[in-house]
Length: 194
Image (tube, rainbow, N blue to C red; front, side, top):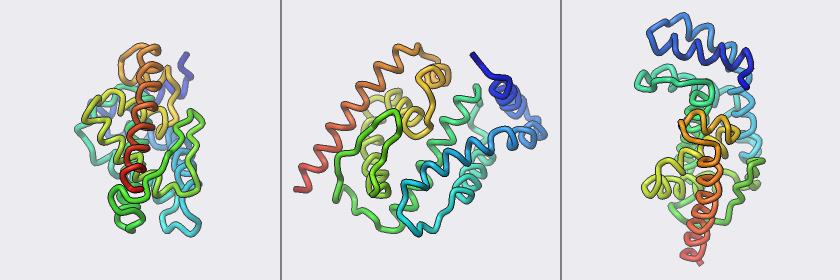
């Protein structure tokens, strides 16, 4: 069941879609803490002394969200799924720019638990997962979206189903198959490096 805040977020997103710029101003205070929590989770997994801070990650993602008028927001779950995807891309781009990982080098097994466990070498893991996720997207785009929303966005199976307009059972099946596929893909990369 939706909370009043969830319904308000959806209402404001739809108003923003319709061109109401004031809806965007009212939306930010409702979603900021959740976006910041998502960013803090990502940043907690990064190396000590990382130059990007959670607030900066939220700000970068927010600027990209505001600038992206091609997205037709459906609801709160869709918004946070897209936000998670943007944060992931920002961190992956940052890691690539910092030369943490040569393409495919040092790829390791990464655990994809619903608790969103990432190892201490998250920059390397994030790049390896991103590469594997791009390969999955070429194979099955919906499964890639499920991983983004569940793993990176922290959305529940129900929220993911709502955002993707599929059943909860489909999300659970896609999640299970995507984890197995990604596990095999990451192990394949690791084997090629050995």
